[in-house]
Length: 144
Image (tube, rainbow, N blue to C red):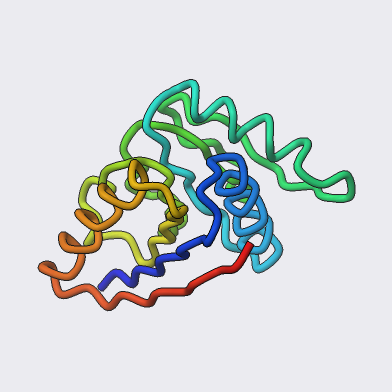
């Protein structure tokens, strides 16, 4: 069964949200969790791809844009707006406005919300979907 963690940021800045996402992705990578970063579109995927190279000078997080083909090298973070690959690492950082398709087959979903209504409203809808599915939800309030 899936497990969902919501990270609710005090900031209403999309840039702060993306920076927090990069820190969370880096932490996952260092824990040998090679997640899929789900975005709404190619532009958002490219933005996260670039940020992972630049958000911290000392950071190195192997990652690539998902092109529909699962890479042979599994120790990499995948970023894309397509459905989570079936045989991928079972953890999703969800930056999209929708729940991942077939989310009950994902072991861990990390949701990041900022303090902006355009982010919180779809976040509440996803929270309700997870709750109705009986998935355990944890909420972390982050002061940033």
